[in-house]
Amino acid sequence: MSRVAVILAEGFEESEALTIVDIIRRAGIECSMISTAGEKVKGCHDIVVRADEMISEDILDYDMVVLPGGLPGAVNLRDDDRVIQIIEKMNHAGKFVCAMCAAPIALAKAGVLEGKEFTAYIGYDEKIKTTGSYKEDMVVVDGNLITSRGPATAYAFAYKLVDVLGGDSLAVKNRMVYFNSFHEEQEGNS
Image (cartoon, rainbow, N blue to C red):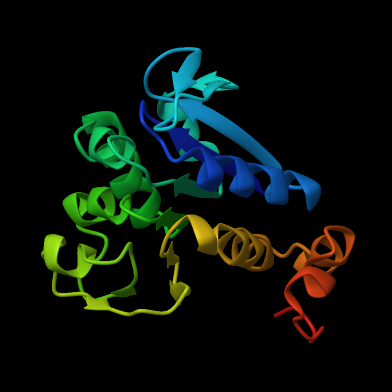
């Protein structure tokens, strides 16, 4: 079974982190919230979450690492050498490295955006210095790199994560009333 590590730093965007964890768990995929700070981590809107685990090299055994955005959460991820080393090692091993909103700044520091297509929060194409190619799509997949835009794209991002891990996002979308809610047409695993 695939395993996903969602890394939480103080100031993370709650709607992104919790949506990702919720959808991945609904798909029956193991998903752990990993803290860089302490057992309890405060998000950027003062919501406190109890992490499942503390950051360690054990994350390298996971199949995917996910960085939610938010400020100062994304800056705290970028400035944490443990996070950067995990991103570098997982990328080198060909494992999925994923981030959304402002968190691609950590991916840039780790060098994984070089020569890749990616997206991030509005205006971050100016803040992220890389040879990569910035796109304005909701979700961008380039090999093992998956990125997304911001809080409103968390659902699309999480469903894509389920899909690339071999899960059934269509079943999760149906159980969550995704199609009726957004007047989307039900098409395969889109």
